[in-house]
Length: 366
Image (cartoon, rainbow, N blue to C red; front, side):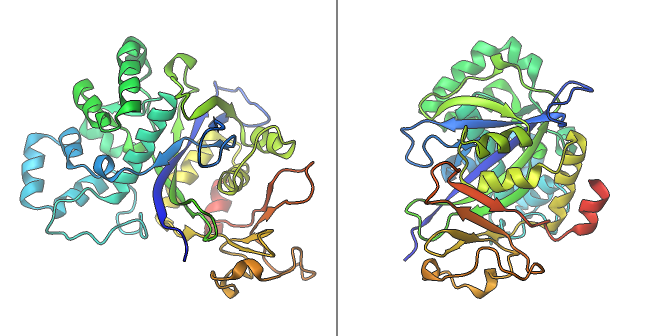
């Protein structure tokens, strides 16, 4: 029987470089964390900020006091279905967004939508790991924003305060809500865009159901705004997609498959604005969970879109044997390749061949 899935959320943070500044032909960099060797999951690997979902915090109705005024709260409590409508006025395409994320909520009950809870999780975990606070001032206009914010001047002026909150929240995550109440700020949930949903393969001991979000910062955050959680993270680094992939190729950094695949997907976007536009627009297509199916004794991980994916059953798929590179060049491959033999090469490689089933959109924006 497969091990139980743990919910989690992660955040792909892209920061724009200064105007007309390019690095390896990219005008933005992405934040990566190197997890320390004591971590139970993915020690010494480079990952995006993020972590485990906490139902008591991320689904707490106390967030309503932060997002809505007294009059709005009164209306929502008398008619709970208004809660989803109020939130979704700030999110693209109410009908399609989060098709598979959405829980079967009873409209008679007042429950925080999972589309919001997972965003709160991603922002909370990012703050716990990096000290970077993704927040906005309280305003109804924030429900219409599509770019992420760091209140740079506010954070600089209140740096000691925020770092004190960071130390407190590392010990007690429930204080995350209190921080926003005390500082009179709002988590910048509307600057986060749904990107992908990865599920750890069934044969792994520790398994996660992880939602990936993107967010786009107008500039690279100042180093003083970071406050790294050394209990979990060794270093925080910023790379362009090509730099990250090159370092992985030369074994200077290590990626687990989702991070490696996402960088291969992202590397085609060299322009910050085009990447952010695409990320915002692709939400129209909703999310579909990706569960890699490993065959050939764990050497090949099939992904949705691969011509073999639907033919392989999850149970017992590890012992199934298929060709790594079939002779028929017309067959579509979408795969994780695991290296067991050659120590000179990275542990993982990918054959990235997936476009969210939206070819016209890709062509228009790229």
